[in-house]
Image (cartoon, rainbow, N blue to C red):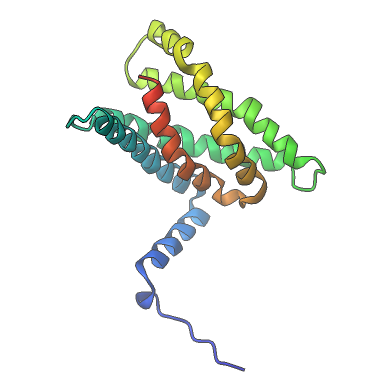
Amino acid sequence: TMPVKSVPVEHTSAHLRLLQQYLFLLRKYPILTKSVTSGILTALGNLLSQSLEARKKASNDAICGPAVARYAAYGLFITGPVSHCFYQLMEALIPATDPHCIIKRLLLDRLFFAPGFLLIFYLVMNVLELKGWKELEAKLKGSFWTALKMNWKVWTPFQFVNINFVPVQFRVLFANVVALFWYAYLASVRK
């Protein structure tokens, strides 16, 4: 037999050490880790949106820091914890042993979670932007249905994979990576 050597941590790549640290934090502080990750990636999605908008307009507009902060707060306080709880609840309500779990999970996510979560997004952003009921009503009438239909088109294949094949502890991260681009879209459609 060949002797197996372990590699000291200081000789591993930075990427591997970062991954190991993330996995450790995910095990020790799951909600906090998912929340912080969500905050960072949601803010990056808004930065991406602003950069793309500036490039499309061929302008050198400065990045709107308050908008980035709003998205970071949304990811930290809403996306991370709510998504964590939703995926845990889904596991309890529709276990993998259910013969129809694949379709049930997808329907639960697409028909209940997606519209509700999108509505929460509109509500929270409206509050964080210090806008009133009339502005919220106008945004909902103007873009909610369009955004929900786009959500169903874009997210359905990703969520099919996520809720049926990604281990539950990685589902928020998987969704956050997809959401990096989704929040860029939402930031542009809500304008």
